[in-house]
Amino acid sequence: MNKKHNKVIAIISCIIIILLIRQFIFTLYWVSGESMEPTLSNLNLVLVNRFDRNFEVDEIVLLNRNGSSYIKRIVAVSGQSVVFNEESSLFWIDNERYFESCFDCFHGLNELFSNEVEVPESSFFVIGDNFDNSIDSRVWGFITEDEIVGRIRIKLWPFGILD
Image (tube, rainbow, N blue to C red; front, top):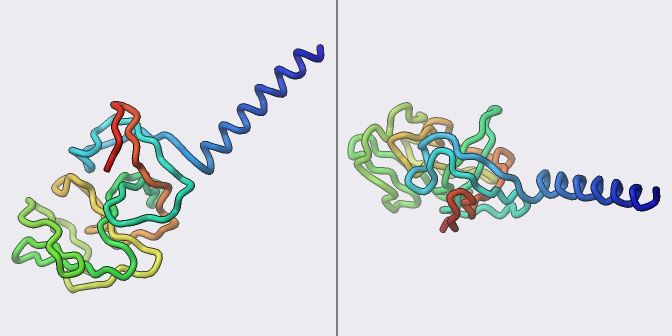
């Protein structure tokens, strides 16, 4: 009876530890869609770090916006300036060209970005790597730190480290 009791306590303890790790430190997420190609493809499995909350430019993050999950790349952080020039098909961050001449990059563009605008405190500007096939900050506007679930650096299926 005592050995059986100890096994039950060990199993329950393991389950609790796994749930705590999943809730507060790491979680798994299956990529859905093509907005992050070629970096991430549909049905890739990624490991999301929920613990480290220091987000920087060029990091890939999982975010939850209005009840839906998205994976995007941070391209501008608080204090940086963002502007689109629809006539020349140029996108600028801090007066440096980010990308140009992408097909339909400005479809549904949020009016906020027709003039140079600064990223607000605790906010980010995110874009999918597949510019032509991504709904992101160009449409939504800025996202807040509260909307970010965590950072993605490891692709588990197929395995790879993301730079």
